[in-house]
Length: 67
Image (cartoon, rainbow, N blue to C red; front, side, top):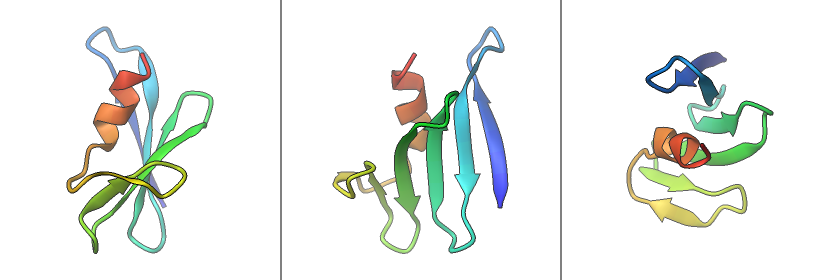
């Protein structure tokens, strides 16, 4: 699994995007609360309840919106 830190312009840590073993990506805030998932096979970003939020990868946007 690969984990990338997401930071704002002042270098404050906002959250993480992690690539899971099945190829999906997971966005979490700094306290590891799950914000959503991106499934590249469906080209869809979903919330933790599996509701489609967008037909694109908007995980970084989910993290920035939590600021």
